[in-house]
Image (cartoon, rainbow, N blue to C red; front, side, top):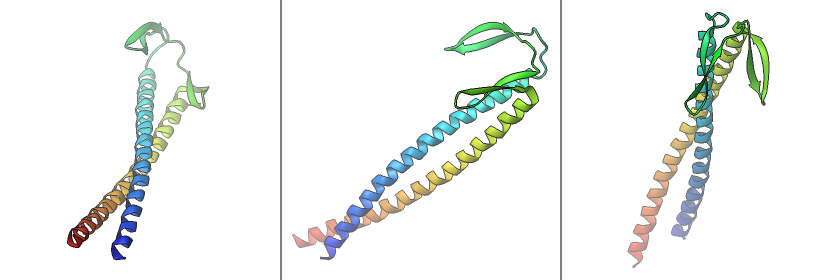
Length: 148
């Protein structure tokens, strides 16, 4: 009877471990998305900051992807176009655009920190469940060996 109860507990622990593995995987994917967003926002921030000192008709190389660039010249940099989400972009004055990018970067960093904390908690729970599962499994194997 006692071994049956231990088997039930072991099954429950294994099921919970599977659920936690799925949760950890989702959190890791979310963290990767946030990390990519951080890198993109930092690049935007740096590019906008670098452009503050440029004058009109300054020659530039503009990346178009795949390591390819096109030649271009700056127009007026008083206003820039900034994506604000959901495929919507608006025109902003350069200082306002820099401020907007900084705020979004701070939000993404805050969210990434929260996701990292959640992931750490899930991984700690998984480790604890794994240890209990290993102990129960050893007890069940030891009990089965004694019956033979």
